[in-house]
Amino acid sequence: MVWGGTVPRLSATYLGYLRLKYCLGALRPVTGRLLDAGCGGGGFAKAIKRYRPDLEVHGIDLGAKAIECAKTEPGNVIFRVGDICSLPYGDRTFDAVVIEDVLEHLAQPRNATREISRILKEGGRFHAFIPLEGAVYSLHYWLRKLGWRAKERLAGHIQQFTLPDIRNLLKDSDLTVVDMQGSGHLLGQIIDVGYFTMLAWSGRSLSSGGLEQELEGKPFKRFLKNVVTAVTHVESMVLAWVPGFGLHITSAKGKGSDQLRPGN
Image (cartoon, rainbow, N blue to C red; front, side, top):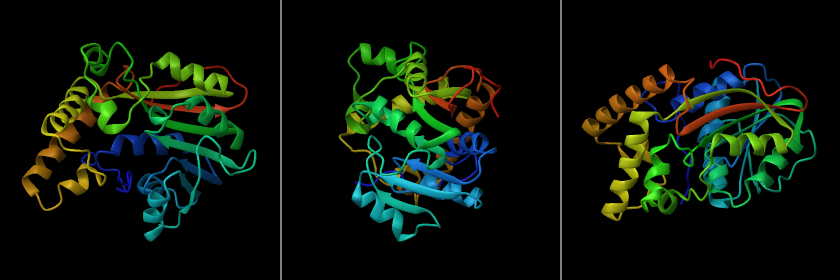
């Protein structure tokens, strides 16, 4: 199974719209080389390259099949197989590193953040999207107390982070927080929980191609998905300063205070 092959666009009807929007905002001051670590099928790395053709974009993933799929249409991105917890790059190789939906899958996420810090140049940027499914303001947190494990079983989310967990991970890895936005508020959480609950009850597995590909050739269902997706994105942008179950966080390697700026 290959994840992450869909290339998101800056359109509110795309599921990955906000992740791409906030990531590109975090990368505005960045020039040079960028790594998408844990890139899966390479869709997000290709999207970054599309909107930032000036960057030298690399993608790495532990899954050989995922990288093979990414390389079929690389989109001027350099892909290779490798472990995020033992990255095959020298110290201070990259000007920026991004990860999307990765840390929650790792048994030892601190190993990954330390490796990311190692390969970043001083002052280099690290941007991540991380679910905060262990936060008390997350519907996932309360449902887990009742025994709900659909997302852990179907999506492999073995970590349930809180914001303090992430701050500690970054601080321990010499990464200073400079900006963050929340997403996945009330409507977004209800839809996420409902979707995984439906999959669990129906006995279906999560589609490796993602919902975008799953709805190809189904115009009415795609229309409904587009409307709901756009509404949830508007909700998240209006409430970007409010914690949600999704965290878009940007940090910089090296010295500096843990200072937040308003979201983009």
